[in-house]
Image (cartoon, rainbow, N blue to C red; front, side):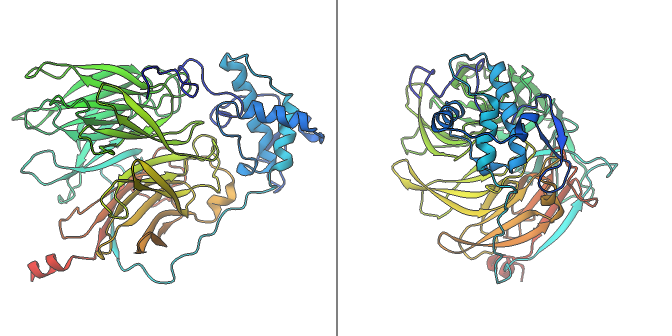
Length: 540
């Protein structure tokens, strides 16, 4: 980005979105009457003013459009059924009143309600993608682990990471549990599967292994939300778990505190001075949130010390994966910025301490529900693509037909092409790997529905919770449903857990798991049975 951070789209955290932008994100109460919706269910609320049809002229419609698209794309009317729009518009006006802005010309609320209701469908129509006609050439044995003394209380797993904690030891599965606040390690080759608690924090959301102090030992850096539910506060932090020898324990060092909800942190030497810096996604809420560079300013040989620099002032950043996109030897990073933006961005390192912002793709609507990005060379052409899921329904507790999986293909020269791969309600995390050992990359995706979720008929139809996209030819994927009826997975890890030459994966229940089946476990490991020919020959 430029030296001046205050571009039109970058607003200080004290003044945030307007219009319908954050209507889905804030629960406000106005005077309502409870009425039956078009489907006969008593689950929709409408204002008394909504009951009378209003005819709008061209001037009124222009005023509505101007107000509702001041700092984001105009909300799409078919994002919600007709009977829902009164509620979304009311929230928008309440939020605008609280924003402190007075530079817009809000039309009467009943006009805006009438505008959206006139264009919205009576009921949402959800896609019904076609399943593959052939079976997935891979089978899995599923092992359910309870991980604790009681299976009655499920954890709320926000992140899973396969990593080595010691150079000579076997890898372990790291997990961040937001219910009990611990970062733990599970050895999948042990029979007890008891997690080793490494530390307890407020709400650990993401963990990354690295050697932050350059002593040759594996440390961990953790993004801590401070609280799970969306709120503006200063309890978010970035924590360094510094490896201690010979005990093998971790010292808890707070690298940055007093932040909003920190959703992600990644290590990289951004200034190429020989030590690791950190890039942090401070998701925040409305008045808090940013992307921060924590620059290591300690002299060589001294314990790391970090100074915080704000790179982007927008709240809502979910992930900040690092990669040198332009090949100049300086790390860049991608960012997924949600809330009302729904943008995938590139931040190109200018080598002078600043970053140039380049938008890769912008969602069509603020209800798009961005949930995650992963960097992977999906077409194996030698450059880094972006695998992108949108399925977050936490904003408004409403499942959208637009949820699904997409691929931003790197064309070179920092240009990317958008490909919609498939629809998937609640799509939350996607990872790519060669599951069937045919030489190309397939995609695994998990779904997460918060609770309570609407419309209720979506849950009643046993929605997909784990989906495999098999790549059958370059850029062509076919669908294989692996599990239905339990869309409660907010994270997943894909790796060769048993070192037999094929990729296994693990899933765990995410936050607010009322949609989980009764037989949902703390952790489920899916053991891939497609052994590689090299491994089979070696065993024989």
